[in-house]
Length: 151
Ligand SMILES: [Zn+2]
Image 1 (cartoon, helix red, strand yellow):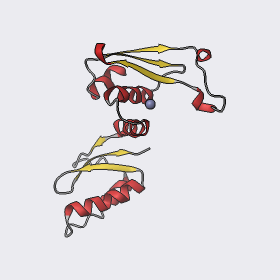
Image 2 (cartoon, helix red, strand yellow):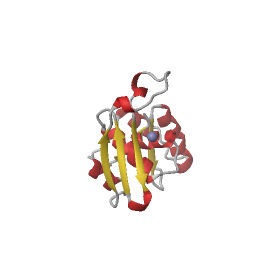
Image 3 (tube, helix red, strand yellow):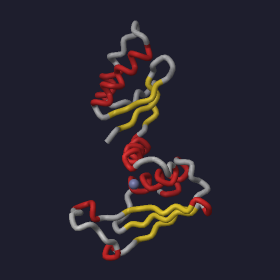
Image 4 (cartoon, protein in one colour):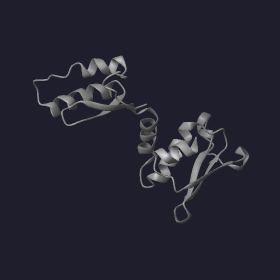
């Protein structure tokens, strides 16, 4: 799983290790409850292209993508990394022949007005899609090329 995401995110040259840590060795704030009590974090060493993911619960694929994104984009915020994680995990290239697009999103694309300015029109539809929890990329003539979930 880590190898797959290293490749996808352009981190081929990195060595990524994981290390299970004892929950008792981590100090949590007293007001920290539920899921917040778990710890997953990464310590990248830029010079040696070596990073260790520390975790005190079983790692999920989402954890791995999240932590590798921190390595790939060290200056981005936690909020950006959270959004990008969902994007990377759900992005789907649209196949015009099989039309592998969810119905809610197809309903949005069907509202495209061919007579209007393509750019303004697709940006109008993008706002509708965002409200439904999706975002997408599009080509020069306003044709959607791929989509992903926001949550
Ligand atoms: Zn993070």
